[in-house]
Length: 163
Image (cartoon, rainbow, N blue to C red):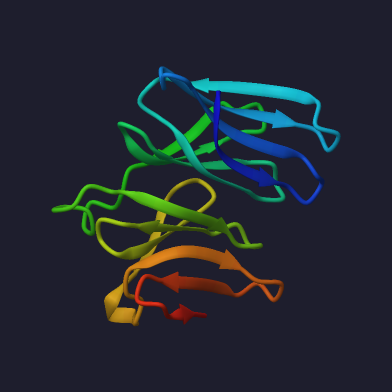
């Protein structure tokens, strides 16, 4: 098994994304704060959990980049609640390629899209809210983070950090 991602909740619960070698199956494992197995979920072979983010409501948001490129919201029991594969307007000529993901304290989900060099903003239910890109001074966003003050920080490939 190869670990692909990790997220630690405020309560200390650990989420691990993994791929079984030779990449036949992918999944997520949930451990308690002592590292003991609580639950596990296996995806079909078209998804891989490359990035994981979790909010305080217990809904886990998984960013996939296996054969299918998507972001999925999972319940605390890992059942799929919704799947987002890009916005029709923004991804009409470019396939959605999620790269990084964060969740704000209000529950908004921010996802970088490598194909459109922009950030998609989603609700907790996976509904599209907005898209921010070059017209907003964001050029090739790569890494997202929300700081202690709750502000979105964006690291762009050109070496600029945006707030």
